[in-house]
Amino acid sequence: MPFAVCNGTELFYDWTGRVDGPVLVLSNSLGTTVEMWDGVVAALAPRFRILRYDTRGHGRSPAQTGPLSLKQLADDLAALLDTLGIKEAHIGGLSLGGMTTQALAIFHPHKVKSAILMATGPYLPPADNWAARAKAVRAEGLEAVVDTVLTRWFTPSYFETHAHRLSFYRSLFLANSAEGYAQCCEAIRDADLRPQLAAIKAPTLVIAGADDPVTSAAMGQGLADAIAGATLEVIDKASHLLAIERPLETAALLAAFMDEIEGKNAAPLARHAFENGLANRKAVLGVDHVQRSLDKAGEFAAPWQDFITRNAWGEIWGDPTLPWKTRSLVTLAMMVALHREEEFKLHVRPALKNGVSLAELQSLLLQTGIYAGVPAANAAFHWVRDVLGDEADALTLPSEDAPKQA
Image (cartoon, rainbow, N blue to C red; front, side):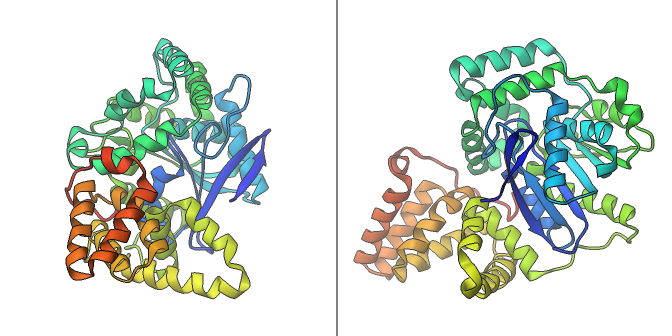
């Protein structure tokens, strides 16, 4: 797995997208990981070279001891860019990632070709709330705040139609380091970049969600007004994590903004089978699994990895005719019929993330017993238990169709 030692910490990072495209760096929000960008990356991969990383104390990037400041987070990112040989890039971040982007543009301006500030502000009061949240997670763990946080992340309509995605992001939130989360809360508590915003000279785009209760459109307008030449775009029907809730709209704004800076005319995103496929493959199967597969391939199997990425994941999973939920159901059914245990197990959790409910999975396996045979279905029920364990009895997910890129 790709890690880099940066500014006294270790950061997990992921490259996706067109190798010769302009570099876009994405910094995650508080409590999320690189996976929050899956939909945006899938849309932009044919045109841009995208670097995303887990902020320290989040996901695979471990927390460090001692207090943490916003400048340290910016220094982490600057060190990551240096380590990877990136002299200058478009830098985008959401919430805490947006604050990190502001700090990078202030303290390391030569590294920022443009700044894209999403659902963020130069400071996020009141300070007492951040101190209380840090204290709570240190005492009781992330379970103490997760449900409250989720209600701020997404609109009520998203809650109603995307509970399968909420379960996925809830699990990612709980897998973070409680200490790392608390340290980042304190970094936000102590941060106030308002006096330094005038120092940001890079072209800047501010994006806000129309229904964001945390960083409102009015706050976004204030941020844009304080940075020379900055503009504000507001995405309708979006709350705080607008990159998850409205990935295509977010990606379109980013592409148009970067195209203008790169001196190109904004145009529809072209189809590039490998770049599309790699982004789709990571979004469905997970960054970790895909990276392991690529790392283990070696020269002999590298052409095979290229083939399946282009064809299975670029052309087939990239075809919008069938939503990803339907493709998950079809894949699981075929793996039962062909008795492909390894591939079936690989696709069980991705199917749940794509909107397949446990009841639908159960019904699918019952039907395979009729059309593929009782022994095949019997094995599949065992495989589900191998993957999900007790979750197979406790997990309840809705049956609504999920959008292809949720």
